[in-house]
Length: 228
Image 1 (tube, rainbow, N blue to C red):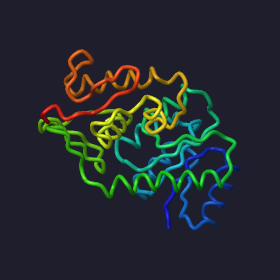
Image 2 (cartoon, rainbow, N blue to C red):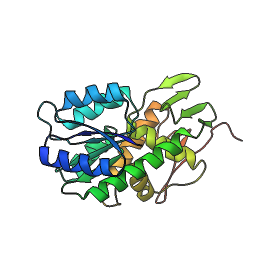
Image 3 (tube, helix red, strand yellow):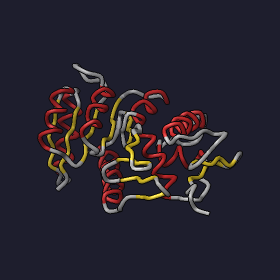
Image 4 (tube, helix red, strand yellow):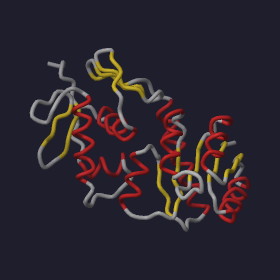
């Protein structure tokens, strides 16, 4: 049985989604406001959170950041807000998926299965080590030369994906699809900004790379600077 917390202020959507997910065998707790939802997440430690952004007491993106500060629980944003800026803001704040209303309950159930599969895969794998860089996927922590490196959720996901393809060039199209769950199309700036920030936090620059090497016109790869 999957434990789901549904944070949604629309009573009709909340009731319909909760009843349908319960029929699928899920245990569902619901909340109509952000702080109520946060209390349930803290107390129940669910397997997945479904989060609306238009909440009466606090913007959903702010709530998402609060959840991410205390938990790595998969979060699916389900909202009426459309457009790249909203999607990017939610994903950068730690959302695992983004679903635009109106959506079918079948689609929501499929998204739940997908994020749980990814979470299970992360938790079953040990840390990734690239020279003195250690990436703990389960704890979502990074250490370099024994010191903690503070990364945003998307910076962590970006670094992890590159580490999982160590030495391989990964294109921006692939990065957008895997990290941001977006098709390629004008999102290369998003990748560039995150790569630049990630380089800085790893103590390097594009002109003097150590771990992150750009292959112009192709993509970027993560390498072990101490290997040969």
